[in-house]
Image (cartoon, rainbow, N blue to C red):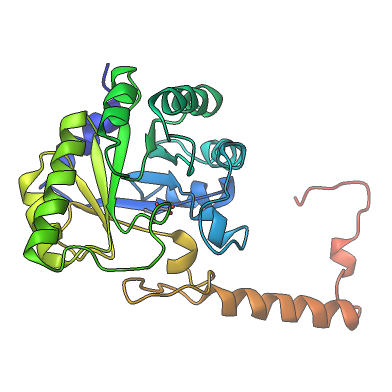
Length: 265
Ligand code: KIV
């Protein structure tokens, strides 16, 4: 049975752009949920939250823990969970772990990065009624260098073939990461499932960004990221003010004292 949120998403292709962002916790997810079609619990948490150099060491337990938090903030968005590196390195492992993630978190779908021929793995997971999102181009779990994909005719042909095989395997959508505008355009035109771009131009059916990047708090701002706010500066200003007030004994003020009740009226 097809998930109703996925049905709605498929209907959006070519009609209106699909809005996606990452979240790792409830409070952020709650804000995103008002606007986003898709919320991804990305393994980018490895870099963004845990300060790792790459995404390789995030565990299934880490992903599940953060998904449970994100889920508490979501009412309507499609909740997609990134499968960490090593969790889908064989059909058996992939099925076991995908079912475990769905059972533990109640998420709507999982995302797998493309690696060699994991189309059979996608097919097997989809057959178990677990919706899968694909991911091609720059795939941080398997590529060392940040590189633009699809810059030659041959590369474009290869990417299109990968995308078509992922669609054929039953994925309901696909992330295109750091693809040239031409390859993103061709793949989006040729596929009937929605393409979600990151660093892949507006030639995609939707866009995704790492929320901490677009809020200006991650310290990682490649050209394809637009900082919609410099949240680091806003937070620093607030922390500075708090520090000054504590030192000057301005905080806590009398109105913050507890006299018989905890909540504000
Ligand atoms: O982990 C992540 O945040 C992602 C997005 C960049 C698509 O995979």
